Length: 303
Image (tube, rainbow, N blue to C red; front, side):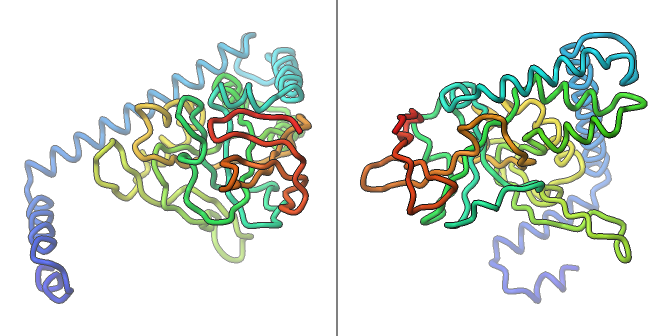
């Protein structure tokens, strides 16, 4: 393998680093230590998954392990979710750190659909909105609220109940915008086919590959299974990727975009460098601003 290393045009420092890595991989003591760390990471992640499911069931209320046993609580919860969604405002969602921001090209109002797409989760405590976005020139921003952590955990919990009412659950899935994956750093991921392969239909998934920066200042590494599972549980406790959990200036989330009950959302806006604000657009069309705007500090102004 060292011969192969020499055949590439690596710097001397990079070659030395690769040699050290090869030596480490052959060291039985270090191998045992890596296995221990990997085992503990997996066990800790499994504990998080159990805790979040139990929290969701506790927030739902009722008793029993089946959908039928908790049907009354499920229906009451869903009605509350949609009622709150209908009254959603920019100010409320931004202050609660529940606003996602996705940047798209001009005239892409149909870019939202029954897809899982990349976005960022805004932190309302940060000085500006712009610093939390990727530096894409001339992009339109789609602002969309995501559920509270409690509602995300309840939805996850009811999805695990035995003997579910499949048509009802499918209806919920098709009508709830939600975070599917979340990470405090760029995921460096792509769409992949997560299906069985031909002749089975393509099962496109986004966010199940890529890289992760596990701590501020740490190097980015390839995401392993525990990292991917952590993205899923972070989606149920999205505050984990903000504040101290934000290992990079711009985080990344994967959002399942669905129809929103509020007349405000989805909110399409475009940054205006001259006025230092986001002008709200009608149907995502840059040529038809509504007159409403959002300041860079996150304050909404009506038309």
